[in-house]
Image (cartoon, rainbow, N blue to C red; front, side, top):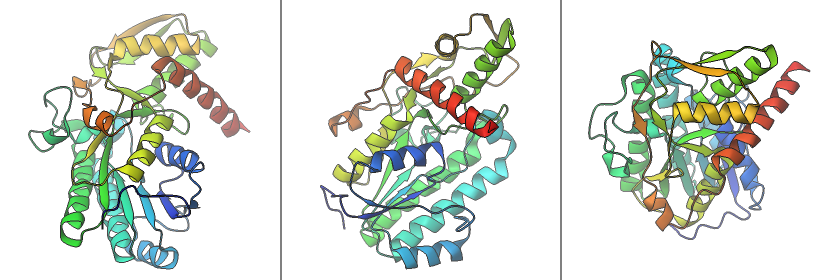
Length: 318
């Protein structure tokens, strides 16, 4: 049953998806909480395998679960790997939430995504706008899987009294991001493109789309801090947006990335590439009332993200 404040100290805490950007940030943040951290790699337990997940939960019996495991990617990945995005994300959520329930987890947090909101929902996006209109077509399979996970958490709270909660992070960036040239999110894609252009002496960088969509960007370690804060202090049916409450056009953002990387060439745009949703800004008033605000500025976060990209690229080359 719900219990707040929920003291993490001394608890066994499972971070599902610890090798991803979000899970990695949660692991870093939980190091300050005095928890017994549980992680498991895909080779040991594939979270899409119900029997394997059930057996692992029965053996380890984590007291708290952060469900950050997901198949993720940018517009191209979402639009190309549509079957994988709906299947993998549906089955991961189903297996982990059900196993947590069966094995007596005291608390679970499901991490959704701001793409669950309708394409043309009023801005900024309030938590109650979910399921009020059609989704953005390019990432509809991923969004539907995430909505199913949210509804599953709500159902287990309702039927079993499980202390399971939902949070919705905005666009994230930082250490551990995916820099794939086609399948990455916009921040990682632009860091890589501007860095390679600087190193290669390329005079013009082409950014996908028109540059006019507006996006909100949150440094991933801020997101992890918000998740730990909510895990300890929040217990209710309503999902909670996690963001900065501020947005920027993709064109403006591209200039921030270019400046961070030290690229001094020109920037142009390719309107034949998809823009995605025209605007995506989260209403973070509920989060603010719960006592949390983002503390890392976009400029500071980008410097940290670029440093992480250089470190990770160096390690990959060794």
